[in-house]
Length: 245
Ligand code: DC
Image (cartoon, rainbow, N blue to C red; front, top):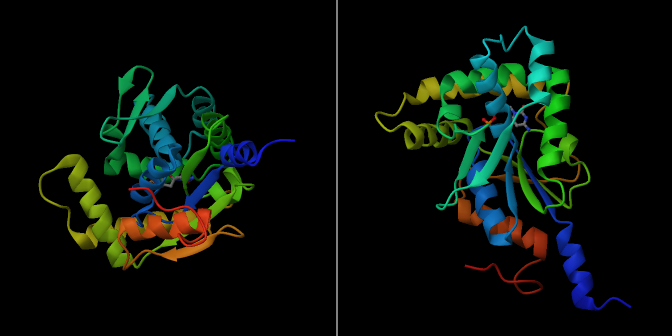
């Protein structure tokens, strides 16, 4: 008979945590922290669409109209997502580090456009599942609990009020590019535009997956959100494991 410990380990091995929500809601920060604390892999599906957008522009493809070429490119994308020593995500295409390059507004816009095409999404979902093969993962995006991993062990959906989200996105842009912060109204308008695209597409729209826990992060720190998720995964500290520091 398998021991309780062996059983607990095998149960742990199947951990797949999905975190979905709109841009600027704090998904990446929280997903990275949670993955680190759980000691499992962090998978940023938004980064995969951004790498495709980067490759597409390099090949001079139109992210709105060149659907067949984009899908072919997606099927052959040589991307690698790895952790850096400071815990952030290192993104490479072939042997080139494009960690910073994929965070520009131009790439954000192209990623939002090409992620509308069902044929592209199909290839990207396949790629995302492949990246997670034989691993425990915290995966974040727009459709990770509904389409990519509908059988995930734990699902979360994050949201926050539009101004808070715009401020967070503003900080993120400053982190990557330094200099002056772009005006809040401009960031908010762009977020809203992309939200519309994400929520209204036919395939893999942004939505709260069935069975997902909803968390409004407007007035919460990243640590508080992680604590809430940890409790949902392991039970409250009184009844389950303590959150490691
Ligand atoms: O989370 P992000 O801003 O890095 O995502 C970049 C784009 O990719 C965004 O416009 C939405 C799209 N995306 C998607 O369609 N599905 C996902 N699972 C993740 C991101």
